[in-house]
Length: 316
Image 1 (cartoon, rainbow, N blue to C red):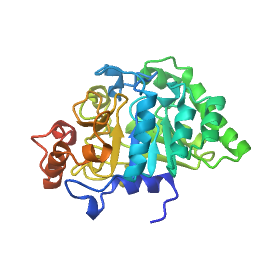
Image 2: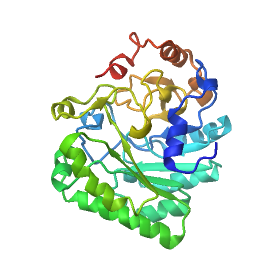
Image 3: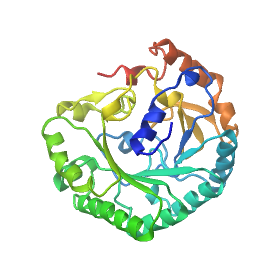
Image 4: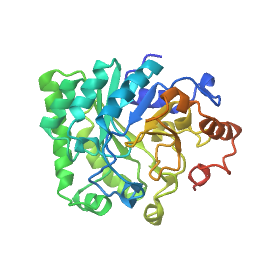
């Protein structure tokens, strides 16, 4: 199908086509690369703050080799992020340019927005970035500080950076979609979020909601205490959620950690979902590894109780 809106792209990835419902599916359309595992936020709903692994930047030489491997395999969409905040990486624009030079038709990026200054955004747009999405999960300064663990005044910086990105894109005539997503909180917090969404939605190409994830059951205690609904697995966007099993992330999209491992999970904060070492193994060999196939077979059977996914998808 023709894909235009970012929600259509999200739905195309989170839906598992019949030909992909096999232990060794074809090459995924999309791959996310963790250029850096570092993040300047300590969000309560994200396990990044738990320091469950060593965090650094991806080796540049490995990244360039990985690009060639992924493109030769048939990957079409390349995410310049995974669990870290990519605007911390000094050579982010060069990474985007290298991906475009390698022939990837669609290069996308999600950011918390705090470091997405007009100058940095312009450099990324000039490099060929096709999509920039801001994660807007905070209603005001007070709640921003409470959730992120950093100073509340950065909330205004994020909002200003979103607005500046639109001006930079429009002034330069860059062919890049600008979007935002936000967590669909319950109760009072959900009501408070409406003001932020209403302010920015007219400026951006599309804004959409996401459910609150359990992140492989690594987080959620504080959120559950607040009465917020938490979803196990990764059901996709809020308006078109999928069943947690089989999990689409095993069949339609791949993720590469900063230290070069292929991961089966969108929330692999502790390395338990590693399916192959891409520093020594070609991408498609790791994608079709027996370890990965065994996990997919469990998902296709509908029973993941004896797998690394057990706690995540059963969360309620």
